[in-house]
Amino acid sequence: MGRETLIEAIRAGLGRAVEGVADSFGDPVLILRPGDVRSAMTALREAPFDYAVLLDLTCVDFAAAEGRFELVYHLYSLSRNVRLRLKASLPAADPAVGTLVGLWKNAEWLEREVYDMFGVRFEGHPYLKRLLTYEGFEGHPLRKSYPWRLEQPRIPMKDDV
Amino acid sequence: MRGFDFVTTRLETALGWGRKFSLFHYPFITACCGMEYMSAACAHFDIDRFGAGLTRFSPRQADLLLVVGTVTHKLAPVLKTVYDQMLEPKWVVAFGACTVSGGIYQNYAVVQGIDRIVPVDIYIPGCPPRPEMVLDGLLKLQDKIQHQKQDWRWAGKP
Image (cartoon, each protein chain N blue to C red):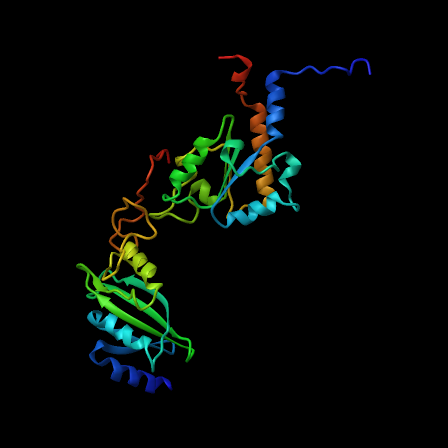
């Protein structure tokens, strides 16, 4: 499947879930409607696309933008040896998206990390707790609105410097 | 051998001499500085030449805490507990830029120098420090131990 025919096939298969197609250094990037992420991923995982591996799931905070949080998904097809990048923009107020737990096992921790760092809620996630920071940590440290260099010690610190 | 069959010294000096050449160290290793620690500890540079070769993996048997690598706020209570478990007399070495000052990290996660958690005797800067710097730090620590007031409460002193 050539690149153009692949994108056409995906657009045909996913319908209105695909908002647009972009290009990143020669690799195709699909822009998804946030409400359709789960259904689109379900389709992409099956034949004929066969993206069996969720390589990465992360997020970017564009503090001033309309769609402030941009989720980035990386998929990989073992049978066809191709990668695909997908993005979905979420609003600043209560960003939420459907979970991918159940499709890919590793989505569970990846989504917990994004929740921990950016405060994106993954609806349907079975155990949406902080992954990297500790109990009692307030806020989401990779948000641009998180105070610069704010530390949240767990034990008393000597502040002599 | 007349004239050589006895030695006079001060108890404090003898204690310091004994202590500085029998440092049992506990390696608290969290990051890449651990590679330099391994280099310093193994045959190429060999801290055993200076009497600090006996690694103890229990803080209760160690008297030198080597904090090697980045300490995060998540880890801070662990380091504090390890320090508290060590018996007196005990010394702490901050090994590498991260333990000295937080190093290149100044953010929500990293403790800005382990001296905010535990008292530190010797700071070894560098990212990571060369093994020569580690040996130099060790020699400076030995000098400090030799010249510090020795704790000899076991001898019946208050």
